[in-house]
Amino acid sequence: MVGLSPMRRAHSLALLALITAAGCAGNRIVVNGVEVYEKVWNQTKGELGPRAAFDLDCQAEMNFVLNRKVGRIPVEVVVTGCGREALYTRMVVGAYGITTPWHLTGAKKAAPAPAAHGGAKSDI
Image (cartoon, rainbow, N blue to C red; front, side, top):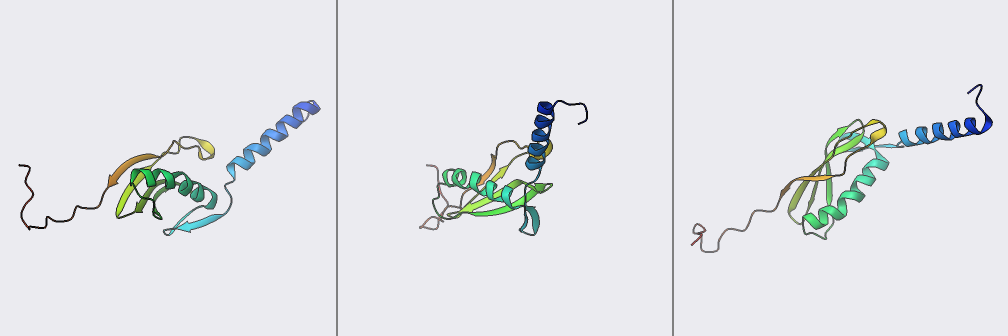
């Protein structure tokens, strides 16, 4: 930074500090046998919890299962609750862990109960 004005040097140092802080996601934890950043996993659950509650029509406690990651960033998560499950995915699109929004890519509701009379269901 030799030759920079004091103001320019201060801006450069501030930018360097910001980039360094953005790239550091903190502590690592193990989820389903896979190491991810704790802060990012908690953020993932915070983002998907309300969405899954709506998508699954379920206000009960949700269970989050990490299916896939890129680096230490979750990109595929299964959320279960009330006998239903939903698969959410996102992509990492750039440096420093920039991701796309979560997308519901697969939802499966519990199988309906068998008919009481034991016969096949008819459309008639």
